[in-house]
Image 1: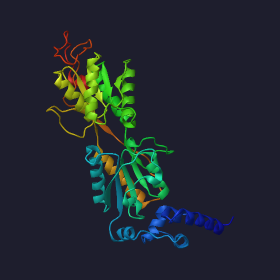
Image 2: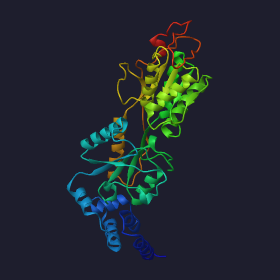
Image 3: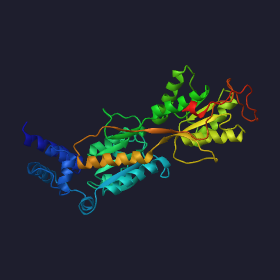
Image 4: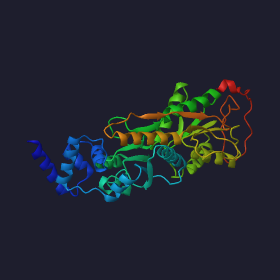
Length: 387
């Protein structure tokens, strides 16, 4: 089969499936979507022979680029589309990611369009309600995916030939072959460090609270579990969600641990919101933090609580946004390339909710009554011993 026959066959397939897309033009002309975009936007970076092939394919397919998108591309700065999927608009973590994206775009003369997207993992790709900036051919030159995402959205973008970068920590069920075009932080290593800190203080009965059906909570549980097993300690965890509200999960699971009279001296919570729920319950039961129970959270996005700083794992969300935008801008400038994964370091921020346990023996606390501190106290370790 010669090249012209193959082009005609592909043209006929496209004609039977609806209006041509920029990806169809790229396939027919044997080039990348980025090269087609460069021709449509009048950029001089495409070789004449390649440009001629692209123009011929556009004519054969009767491809009609979106005029609004073309005008935006020609008359203003390049555009990134920031999509927040399946998360509340006021989520502090993702708001800071958007802030990082915006700052990088401001510094590099790019424009960022914000969109919210709600969809489920089982929704057929043709039914995903893609934002207008993605549906309009040529409007957004790359998509930044934040929030909670699934493989069906990734497939929808790839079918349309839309370049993207993604926050990998919140990509559920990733089916891609290699970790490229993504930014993440190491949940597992961060959780392991936080748990080791509690163990070094002398804690043995440390509970993890977080819904391990979600990958980020599962990664943090894995780090907790590894640190416990390193010292021959038994992992103790509440790993199912009682509520969609994480504060309520922390509150109710702490109640359950105490009512069932499980030994407890410390809690490692999968997020700060869970930690605050644990803290609220302990306060209502007159159980002192950190004198009787130590608490560590994860994220460090909400600031002080109850006048005492929460010890937590800090995730630099604005840095994540900056690196996502940097990667997306590089993909716009070099659309044929894939970029290796970027891992952002975390930091254990030691504040006021952790101290060594007051007794060598574990204390069993009971909800609903006030308790005296355990007898046989050990002298507290010095700060130098805990670094």
